[in-house]
Amino acid sequence: MKILTMVFSVLLLVASLNAAAFDKDAKFRTTKVHLSSDKPLGVGSNTFVLDIKVKGKVPAGASVRVKAFMPAMPGMPAMESKAEAQDLGNGKYKVTVNLAMGGTWQLHIFITPKTGKKLRVKTSINI
Image (cartoon, rainbow, N blue to C red; front, side, top):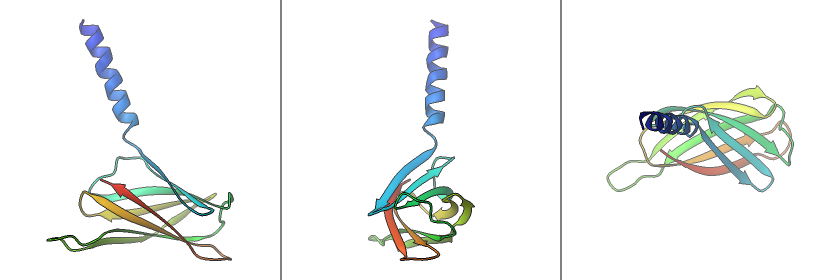
């Protein structure tokens, strides 16, 4: 019986470790962004890797900015965090934003390719 309990505990621990990472897809028209994080999201600094495709292709040398915000609510002011993403190459960008409290945060991802129209992809996250 002890062995069965230990095996169950180990399986539960492994499942919780695999569930700790964050993954989400966001899309607007022909622009797709895959957001991921190695650590679970929480209050404070959160680092995301953005994998961006525009019309199925990597936007080489694009400038990427992220704005995370929570609108004002009764008894609470609006909160916002903006950051410029670091180009990791091959359509991947790394960005760190500060999420000041738990709740639903809106994310706007602004993509400015070297040529062409500026793009914005919207999504939300819960912490």
